[in-house]
Image (cartoon, one colour):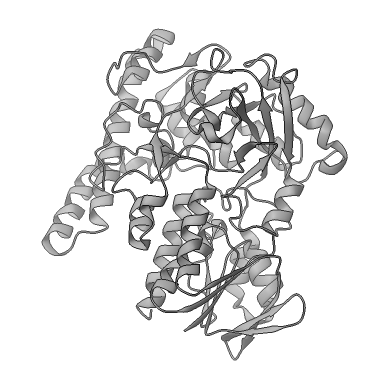
Length: 508
């Protein structure tokens, strides 16, 4: 079959690689000058930085992304290093001890910091363990068949009973149930701010999954494969471009094409079936099927047209909330930052009112880094990303797609200076020792992703916020990418693309 794919992010490339290996004629169109979307590596003056993905799960042996790379025959091209991250609050930093103290050392550290909540910490971690056991059973059930699948479902049902009453709770209710301290609540729930999701919107039973202890100490056993929910977190050596190039290479090797600098004007539909795409220059590219990634509004409303869509899909798309964007400043510095931040990655939180912080972001009120940021030093795990004796540094925070005051283009330098100044609270001398600088604002991301509203992670994991399914009501049209998955992320979009390709190949 002749397949056209719109967008060369990891969803489009992954789906294209599977279909090309199966003998389909695959053409990927990318409107930006380089492929990869936000899973790419950019460079300047001998330094290199990843645009978006930082430390990721799913790439350890037996995990979802690693299995995909193995199935595509390129696993050996994407090497990773197993690592962890730090978390810092104004009052303390949770940094792993030099000597391993077991999987619950953070719980014991928090007991010392919050002695009045010691018993509640024990109770919360029993809930955490129960949820991890449930997630592990669910992972095993994904591939089990027959009696084994039935037994796993029975075990899941039994394990679910003690937490059944929390199924309709949100993250804020869960934290209120276990803790009194707003600081302690933020330790476990602060990461939802990365999704620009308020605690009152996030599903309570998902909290353990976004705050696994293994993210903070790589020495905690993860049991590679599907028999454990204790995910291993990794960095891709040499930057995420190696992942993009490996999967793109499968398409090219099998005779497919990846064409850049080429935007799509229209997805052509006749009698409820896709016929191909019209390019921005007016040319028509016929196709038996089209896989579109990117924004749901841009794909369905702009390229397909509401006149070709059922009313319920239009209503669903119009009601979905999207994430906001990010502001990044990439630095190349000439001194070693590890005396100040020993790990490659640390999250810094400065606010405990996550509800207000999210509300302000959505209204265009940018915090300029004062409510939180992260600092990432990729050259610590991949020295090739900086010249000898130098370091690549990324300073990153969530930001409104559109500012309430001024514009990103007019305030680009001002707001970037302010973000670096906040980062200097933790790594002094960044500005003085900067050899090169590269800024990425929401406007830059809009250009790169071809979106009217840049939603960095796609559809946030807000309760009741369900994205469109991969298989659309239009025959031969499939929807993939960050806005087809709740929470986005590299592993999620690759897994979604894998499932979509399998559906196509099985004729579903």
